Length: 418
Image (cartoon, rainbow, N blue to C red):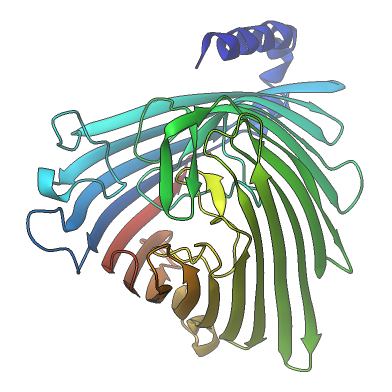
């Protein structure tokens, strides 16, 4: 933590101290929960069109541990609480020619670290149905989606507020000043990603956001509106609509979203001009779910986001994002839940996205495509209940960026400690 956040946590502890004696037999302890997640992760990404001396593969194997503690609140009109997250990663296999998988930190000598870890603390205060948090945060909003896609989850440092005083309406606001990347133990400055190109030459002092979601129609319909700003780089608005409706034996769904971004403040990465629209339509029958999606990039810039963060875009996949300047992309997806055949916990998914109309700046139209296959199983009964196994295979091809063949094997288990 920085000195400022340390002072805030100290003030929190002082303010909460008068209630701690009562807290031992109150909600602070009784409502506390703790889980331990173990995650064994093998990641292999082969850059299939790279030849010669240039690095052509990122392949590593690691073991991770994630301890999550969430307290209840002290009694009274204003309740105090404290959350903690402990993360620890261990290298099982790596080499200098296979680093940068996103699982492990890379040292100055070009080798992966043997291990890395972090303890994050979050002070929280609750009044009615409004909650304020200061410290280690994991926001999950359209402009900063929680991206737990490697060995250990990322985090941000700052303050956030969530309010649900009005039924169906959830409002949020936040001020973030630094980040802990998914393969780091320390804190880094906030940076931007434009399309698939990191803007590592500059950094921002803060990421600010405000917005809300309103659910109605028996929670079948949700509308969203958000504003965010990566100071001195870009600002972005988001508007979204999610809706589902039963039609006979089917359930039809729609997920629509629109982003609008422009440069902000000192314009550290230059002009930003991006409007992104996506629509993902679904139809569910029994264990079958069919999807069709469209995504379009408009304006003269690729889609902007905070570095190493995923987005809520409908056609974004784990390998390609389909967010280059002027890109149009189309998706077909099919999921099957084997619970319909009496095998709960077994899920399969296949999806294919193709994109074109990319402004490459190299005198030709950019095109890309990706096919993903996912298979996962979570054991439902003792002694292996809670053990999950997931396999992913992806193939991505493009005429303007690197081709990729990717495989992932993830084995996880969650212990509920209390």
